[in-house]
Every structure is written in C-alpha cells, then in structure tokens.
Length: 142
Image 1 (tube, rainbow, N blue to C red):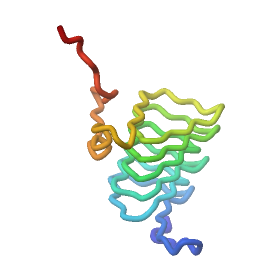
Image 2: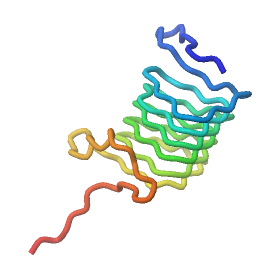
Image 3: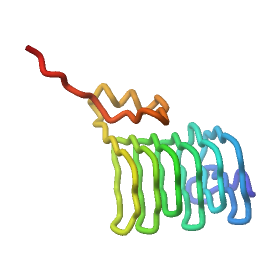
Image 4: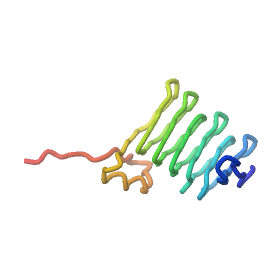
C-alpha cells in the first residue's frame, strides 16, 4: 500500500490501496483515493475515488467524484459518478450527475438531484441501509 503518492500532473496527493493489499476500516481523506486491491469499509470526504478494474470495495463512498471500473457493494454519495463498462455495483447512488457505460452491471437505487433542488443538501447526509432516499414524494392535496 502506497499512501500519499503525489500526482505529478496537478500536485495532488493520491492515496493508493495496491492490488496486493487488503484494508479494513474507514478512510477519511482530504485528497483522492485509487483502489486497486480490496477495501472493506467506508471512504469519507474524498475529492475523487477510483475503483480500478482489479479493485473491490464493500462499503460506502462519500466524495466529490467517483469512478467505478471494478466491483462495489455499498452506497455512493457524490457530485459526479461514472460507472464504466466492466463495473459491477450493488447499492444506492445519490448524485448530481451520473454516467453509466453500456455493459456495466448495476443493481442500485439511483437518485439524481439538481443544483437548485433543496435535496442537493442531502448529498451531505449518509444513505440509510434500510431505507434508501429516493427523492421527494408529492402527496395529493384536497
């Protein structure tokens, strides 16, 4: 595991869970994370999280941006989510923007919130395992 590798392109620190590594626990990051190995736990406050083709995560991700190429079982709360063709996801996704490539296997409740929506503030709230948040429901008024 190589923590705090510096990305030479933009000077940002990127933490890496390498392909040979397994990690259990919660990661609270201010930078970005690339998962090439296995993570059982949550990722909080990250800028960007990438789960590579060899990466596996069982836990929740809260980040600005998320790219999934590998496997994930858990919830995603992010401004931008990209799910690429080789991805396998099971869980809930709440985002302002989502892209799902053809071929991806997604078994998820997906909620897209807009910039001006009051629900955008809900991006800061964790998604409950037992009751997924699916947006506002309007009741008929008499």
